[in-house]
Length: 331
Ligand SMILES: C[S@@+](CC[C@H](N)C(=O)[O-])C[C@H]1O[C@@H](n2cnc3c(N)ncnc32)[C@H](O)[C@@H]1O
Image (cartoon, rainbow, N blue to C red):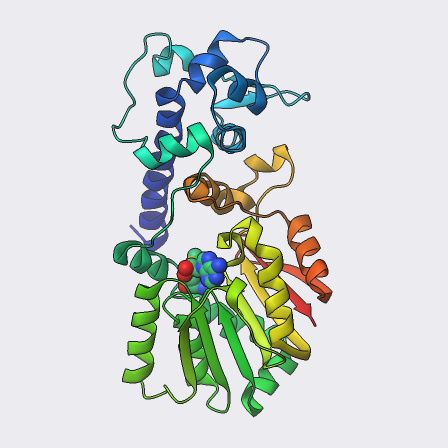
């Protein structure tokens, strides 16, 4: 058996686990039962009114259940149960969720009130995030910088680079090793990630060119200091209310003609795309991150935010068979 088939087996288990989680929420909060009782179908608003639950979360649940082909949706936006699911899932019989523990108390509060759970990233979560993205620097070195020759040249000559939402600092540490004339700053609010980043920079002896700060994008207060800013899987994590100020701060922190490089998971803007593989990661991340108040952005919203913050020349492309959006914008 080769690496690819082993990996695809594990990814299949992971996807099945996530689908079961979505099913459990539907069973636990009576969403399937309400859909079962109405053959005409229901919208998120209908479900919210009927069950006194938070409509924006129900919309995400319906779209994710549609993604997993548990639900259908007609041209009026009415969601219905797929054939035979009522019997198979035991919806009429009020069966217990397939795996217990689907609805944590913070999720229950969120689905009832829409109040996100205050998010404190634990050491374990911080490590898991960092492992999931630890090879992104290779994408930078082998793809982004190869495609943007002028940027690579300026990094060779020496620039100031800031990574917003830097996590454990993998990206800027690797870039600092590759470009000894450039200096780097990473900001984040995950103190566990920042501790690991600082310790790695010290061990590698590059702390004179690499610094980290416990700072959110909305608190960033610099003026024309950096040539390049980047955000890797970080824009979607900034809460919607904080995004306009965060992007304005980043714009202000860049020098004239400075570049912002954004890498993030694409998120669908229309229902049919909820079954397009390109959006798999974004759809599932959105579902699991929703109770923390995280709202993923579609391309139009990303572009509008960038324009409102003052960025021009917004260029979009995609990486890894479309699983990542790469956006480069200029001040
Ligand atoms: C999915 S992680 C990606 C981390 C890192 N860029 C990487 O590729 O490993 C998103 C990061 O954004 C950070 N973040 C969330 N909201 C933020 C904010 N308002 N300002 C700065 N960073 C933020 C999180 O703490 C987290 O470390």
